[in-house]
Length: 137
Image 1 (cartoon, one colour):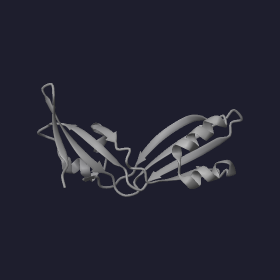
Image 2 (cartoon, helix red, strand yellow):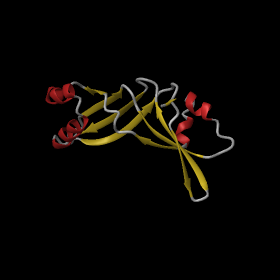
Image 3 (cartoon, helix red, strand yellow):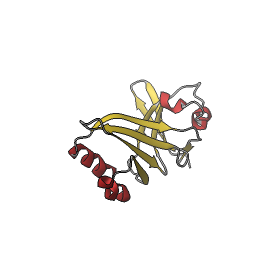
Image 4 (cartoon, one colour):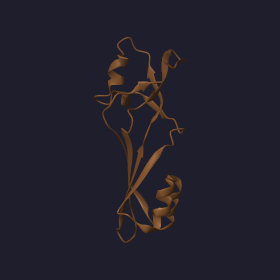
């Protein structure tokens, strides 16, 4: 089912599409470092990931090309993540017994808080979007 909302902002029309990425194709990599230069890599993998894609009305817009997602064409438009996609899997490298219970619970917020309490600072935070079709829901 196509979920589209038209929005008139000034003189420009915008269309909003509720989208979902291919199953298992979106992840996040965060690197943390403490004062002793110990690094921890946190990988978060979403089973499903989606949100609202907002595109400006354009006669030349080819929605099919955006949905094929071969060259991440969707990134040329505004995207708002839907925080209801909470089915995640968290991995930590190297494994660390101090964080094992949190990783088992798959609680990213608690893990980030514990890393901060333990003196780790976030060095990089990168979202990774693999190729794969995007669907309008």
